Length: 296
Length: 239
Image (cartoon, rainbow over all chains, first blue to last red; front, side, top):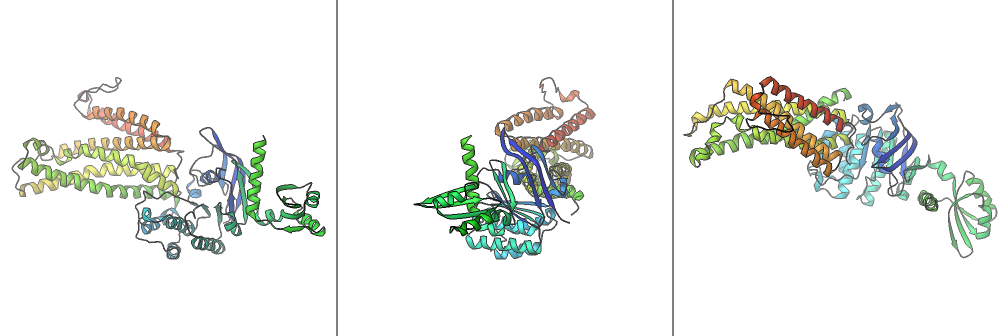
């Protein structure tokens, strides 16, 4: 069965503060979503609503046309992995893993043990005694081995060293091939993880900024570099996300539906073009929203 | 796992976990402390003779109410967070908690009656000079009813307090404690000989017949269950 999630006009207000505003979002099966946003943008709040950790203030969140909140069939299909505080967790890794099949019908214990070996997790140690990196590896092990149709990783790699993160990324791709599902990866490590994303969702100040597939988004972006006058003339009618000047040379980051033809024109008049990185787009898209906000 | 079965499994899981804690309580309170106090009363301090004048079932009653209050206090922070983070609904958690607490309130008096019988079998073989009270069938039945109801009330009160702290903040949590102190005193008034007058709602227990006391206690448990359900129905699971 193909799973899909729908956010319909979802808002969240906490103690009078508007945290999320009128979010509409569709998540489709077998895709990896990169959820990007600056600190305090509302990423974790959005994910905690999806995982039914809290009720929405208004709107609906549905899994396969069924409301998720307090729906046992839906809630057991959503696994939300985040940077948990395990300072009071005296249970051993092994015992916690053994309890999981009750909660997660698709939990694969053998795969969990395989990951335990790869991450060098000590089975007999209480979770509170593991290092931060090891606790993150435990979170990731639970998230991957649960094989929930909706698997969420919210900065759950914090504390992991680079080789362990690399192992985690490979496992996500491997899992997506063998056990496709909806993965949501909320991250600040954009440049390190962008190769994983099929879709990109950006939120800013609790509002939906952008939701698009990765290829399509990147095809709309182009970086043009050359003489300032020529760059200005060429990009006069386009959305310039960022400009950098060095002497009489200028580099402009453009986001436009006609990025391909614009790039073509730029090359024809001798300007250099480059495909920008998702991280650059993220930085300047969110910065632009800020400057608009400041101008208001 | 069929989701329709989950609430019973949640109840069973909580009951088993709470019984592990109860086992320590039963062994330490009903065997070690009781045994030590009987020996001290017999050999060292006559003032402790009142321990021997009580049956084991009576001896453990005060401590059991405190134990159930503590178990109730632990319910939300230990179980709600864990279950909620693992996809268990708030209704399944509430149902499981209620059923497991009923199981615990039934198990404790049964365990103490059995332990009391063991004590009665063992006492003649132990060189004690003081007389230790023996348990009659009638008093066991009467005390068990009181036990079950007071244990349930104390569990529900502990649960209520901790929901207040978890759902709101420490200041509102303190108000919940105030409500519980009042409700706790009313409960005491139901069973004790002392006279409590709290806003005219409770009077001397001797004036109340057993069916009325039972009805009031059951009513209080039901009200607390309804309030606790309402407060956990849409509670935010802490991260």
